[in-house]
Length: 224
Image: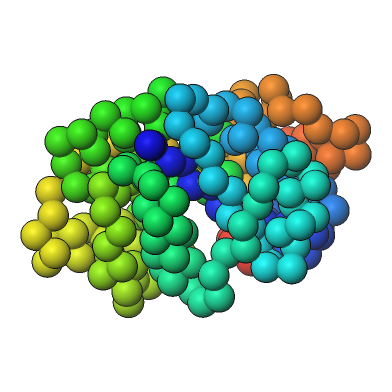
């Protein structure tokens, strides 16, 4: 069995897309995040089992009701701990290959997931780099918690540190196509055409358009 692990959050204003909230507003940023989740779940479908892992833990039942499918609670801990636990759960459930993604990448589609599984036919690890130095997708043939220990998450060092751990573990890997997440106003500008296709409510669309059309450079991440 091939398993696609999807990490998602409850779309609560002020708790998701926090780097975009200063330019979009917390409500619009949360609505955009919810639309990104729906887009990911629709476009990443394929001949694999999809396993949803939500945070915070108490939101799992609400997320399951929202999406109409079971949602497991993510483990407690940093992102590495949570991803390691999700891979362990996928393999314990019978997966022979598992790929994990988030929901912030509009350019990621089912064909990219398929390529990751194909890469895992001949390699231990498959990884799709992100433009910010992290990665948007990671595939494994066996749960390997060492790949996640001590990584400086949410920094440009993530990809390099992960590959260092792959090498130390003696694993083979294949690098996949690079993609970009939607975390900053510059990211929104880069993906403006894709954003236009998202089904957004009028107020969220207006906030997005106003931010995209504002003159001058994008504010620094976190600027208020």
